[in-house]
Each structure stands twice: as structure tokens, then as C-alpha cells.
Image 1: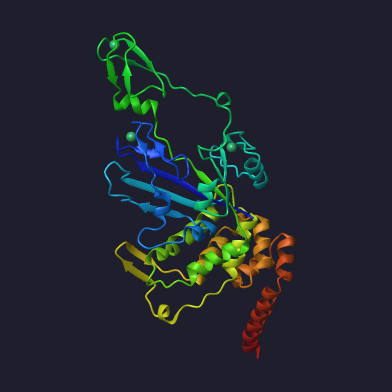
Image 2: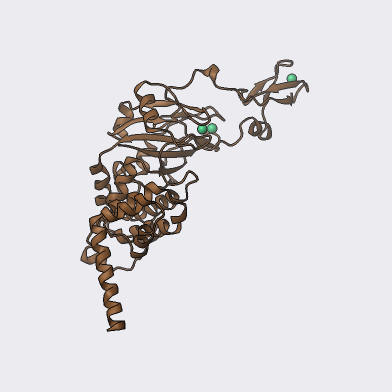
Length: 387
Ligand SMILES: [Zn+2]
Ligand SMILES: [Zn+2]
Ligand SMILES: [Zn+2]
């Protein structure tokens, strides 16, 4: 089953101190502003390992979202001084109109080495089938969408939105036409003197660009998702501070955006498998963990420790709040596959206007058992009242 793990990466160029949006996974890049080669030097790989080692494969396999901040990636002179990486799990979508890409189209583009086109707005994105470099980064990766080193449309198909700006030569005053391809150091075609283009002009030609959204496409099994959950929920929170940070925010960040996404909730095979595993899992707290305060203060910040029950609570409170807007498929999936559904939500599902949701709940044996125990409790209560 396919799962997308997405990156947006920005680095500060040591040559000119400006933001550079990274356009390809893992490769060195050239600064658009000053032409300096930016050595990525395994920055992405290392960002998962700062502080203490964190298993990047397990992180990518899970449905998690967060920021990996790495302010001091390398002490070397001339190397990238600042690095920012946002990662999230959401099906790959069109970078222009955010329409999700079909899994069959993704597979077709990767197999046939061709760009992928948005089915709504026809925007093309380059597709890079997994090569050795990508396989080393994640052994189950099959390709990368929107990577500048991928198979792209023929250059003359891409519409050129040229911004022309007229600039007066600082020596002879002649009007020079500039566009985004102009060099920063520009030779006047009349007097041959060189002009260093001022920031105001340069920035107009090169407006701030958000880093591209780069989608790493993985082909996973259910066991890969389960292993990620085991990894996070059986860890010793005292010894692994970075894992603590991931559990503190990355689980809840993903759940929050899942329910509030503009396109509504998505239900790929992989996210179904994730919800099924996450919401049906039980992890024992080690006796040591039982007594700890749920907030822990470390040099890097204050973390609220989330246990599996907390993550389930976050899911169900989002589910409850969004209930009126949720699609039938998600309600049906939860009704039919989750063993422990909070009473009020089970009640909502049992009264849902869609028959398929009510039916799924009725067929869910474990849920039915719970319901009968709830009724028994109720009978007990009424028994007391009327007895
Ligand atoms: Zn630069
Ligand atoms: Zn589109
Ligand atoms: Zn001139």
C-alpha cells in the first residue's frame, strides 16, 4: 500500500546569507542568488539523528507531522549554517490546487518515467523513480514526486511567466532590460561597465519562493506501520528525549491536520491500516513511567508525555468535533474496525443517518459486546432507580 512522506526544506546559503528553497531530495544544490554550490552533506539524514538517534525509516512509515529543526548543522566554514525541515504525512497533492493525486496515476508515472499531471488543473510535477540514493534513504521508497531531478515536461511546454524590469545603467544611464535569468553582476550593453544589481531590483526578479513540497512515495506493509507504533510506545521516555519530542507533537500534529484539511479527511489503504493499528493498540506503561509527572522539562523544552490512550483521545475528540462534516466512509471504517469506541461516539454512530455506518457498527462484534455491557450498566442504574 502506498504512503507519502513529505518534505519542505529551506537552507541558508553561506555565500550570500539568503534563504534557499531546496528542490531535490538529498542532492547538492546551487544558490540562485550567488551561484554558490550548497553541499547538503547528508543534512536531511542527520536531522533525524540530532541529540539522540532516531529511526528515520520508522518515522517516515508512520502518519506523523512535524518540524525537524537543526539550527547548527555543521561548524565548518562555508557550509550551510541554518537548516529547516517540515515533514508531514498526507497523500501527495497538486502543488498548485492541492487536489490529491490518484495512487494509480502515481504508480503509472513512476513505472513509465514520466511527469504526473494534476487531473483538476493539469499542472505537471516531475517524477523521480527511486534510484540507489533514494533506496538508501528509505529501502521501501519507490519514487519521489516534485523532485527537480525527476522526469519533467519538455521545457517548451512549461509556460514562461517572465517578469521584465527596466534598470538604468549606473554609469551611462542606458535602460537595460532584465528578467529572472539576468545575472546579478550585469554588463551594460552600451558602455560595457558592470552593474551589481541592488537588492530592490534583484528581489523583484526573484520573489521569495516557498520551498517546494517534495513527496517521497513509499510502498509499505501493515507490519511497517505496526513497528512504528511499537517503536514509539514501548520506548523508555527517560533515555530517549528526541523520541519524546516526536511523540509529544508529531502524533497530535498529524491528527489535527488530518481532521482540518481543506480537502476533508482522506482514506487511503495505508491510513486505514494506521488508524486500525493505532486505535486498537494497547501498550503497558512500565512501572517506572507510571509515577512520573506527565510534563517533563529538558534542556530543549517542556514536553507533555503522551501515552497511547492520550493519542486515542486526541483522535476521538477531533472525530467528535468534526462529526457533522465527516465523510461516511471514515465513520463506517471506525464503526466497523475499532474495538474500543468512546460511548458517546458509539451512540452517534448507532444513530447515524447512513445505514452503512449503523450496519458496520452492528457487525463489529467487539463493539456490540461493549454496547451490551453499557446497557447492563444502564439497567443497573435504572434498576436502582425503580427497584
Ligand atoms: Zn547564495
Ligand atoms: Zn492542480
Ligand atoms: Zn552603461
